[in-house]
Length: 315
Ligand code: NVA
Image (tube, rainbow, N blue to C red; front, side, top):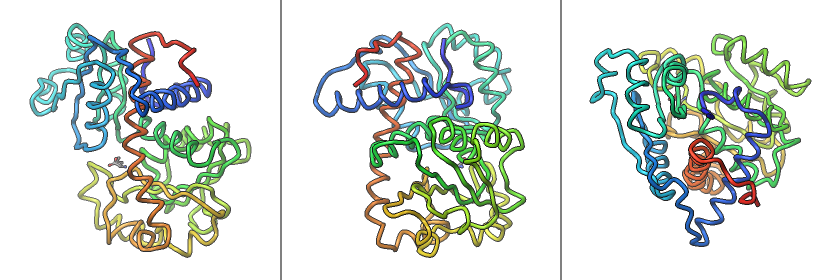
């Protein structure tokens, strides 16, 4: 049984196979080729944090594959009233074929996998966001034609997005650089992962211009993630210089892509100057494809977990 708890658990081959299969499903969807490969399967979706894109893409993705998505708000579940995650995992495993969970602590997701007997998908924790990064890799590959040899640069908080981007980029042959204020660096073991697998192509600095030099992809995220609302003011001061703006884009490679996992807070955060720049069009385009890519990727994952996939489907 395959879970998606964090990207570190997946090999390069698994990541690339998933991207290939996602391309295939996208092609089939576009050309009206039916692929109801999850007929009769049900996916429980537990949300302990807000969601727009993840919820909709899972729900629509599951439906397009012929399966049944079930939205489970933690406010309405016993887990929200203190039922141990072990019990929830055991009970839900008897009703469902898979669980997607968005929550705070990574250990809750890991516990579902330990105590349950069905595939678990991490739909975001404070620690990581693997589904988003698979979708980003698919988007980059589609626009740039490859991943290997490209340079990804992350500007901002050493948070869930950055943790997964480090793993996703390095696992697929990209180089990775980041600029973070020194009190907001990613956890030590993620930096160690970068140093080990980056092979000299990994760096974290405090100067955004240094990090962005010759980047092919610039990525950014909010300064205060869900659950950090009380730190908003302190964070706004700490991240004031960490903007994706014209000055920063001037040191990147030609045709550098800008990605943001969204939601983006216009007029306040990293994108404010960038949005006004000449590359607004490309950003808007990314925004549209994000949703699509994720939808197909999630489809793929569910298919991998719930049904042994047919290699002949890969383009
Ligand atoms: N870092 C953000 C990502 C949202 C998709 C958060 O956790 O709120």
